[in-house]
Image 1 (spheres, rainbow, N blue to C red):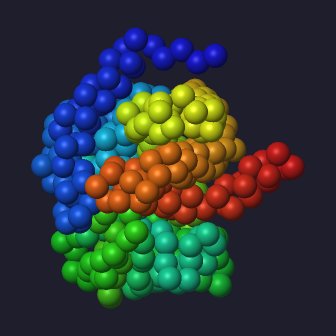
Image 2 (image 1 turned 30 degrees about the vertical axis):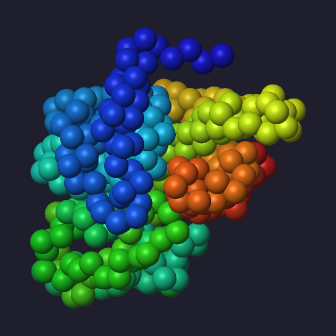
Length: 379
């Protein structure tokens, strides 16, 4: 049994209150307009939620993974779009720089990312390289000067339109696959860095997703993150943290869907009584609640293993797989409880239904999670 420490619960409660008071009231409007929540992200940065695990010496609060994921779930409960912006900045931008960056890189980038003065993104996926991350075609060629020239296009980059800093991956020899991949810290202001097509998406419409285009982009050796030809290892290790972040986002969506279903079931009358009195509805609530609790336990286990610096790749994959499928299950069941009203944009469950769908796709599809889990078990 996992007990949430009181000091952790206080921060989680703070995230919940801020989410419902400051984020949730405008979530539906952002879903319609696709407006980036700049003021909210700034406030989250000021409160310490954009760099929760960054040590104080680099401008963060030095909190643990457990506090981060439970807080992220509360932000997702209010608005999944804001949650994924927060998740990417924490898990996919701050984390690899903290773990693999030089002291100079940490001092240069982490304080701004932790405070949301600047926003980070993670540029791995390409038109021909998604689940097969070793198939990168984005090239990094070493010049006689020691600098690197980068050419290529990334796609499906969350925070891409707004990001100031990208942790990006490129290959020195695509034929060598994972053995020649390098990681770089790229800045939006660098010549050759461009934002390409901005995607129109089914859900998560309050967060920006775009292509990033690198054209004859010359960067110094100091832009490389980690050792040469070790970028694939950095990418995969980073995704473990990203997966637990998306699991937490999924948990928030699932909880919100269940709670809205309960509220509606108590208010809606049919056959002379609230539909909450009907066994068919009660079973839906029971199934949603059981899956939610199981998802949270998986997330907390993965977080505590990560904090203890124990192997956690399988556990992160399990948490992401189960929580994301739980988010989709709960959103679907909640819509069903609402009946025809659930299909209307006037009701929040319609947005949750669309927002949930991406969770089984990004940062590793459900199929990839199952491969990770199976390989870990089989050996």
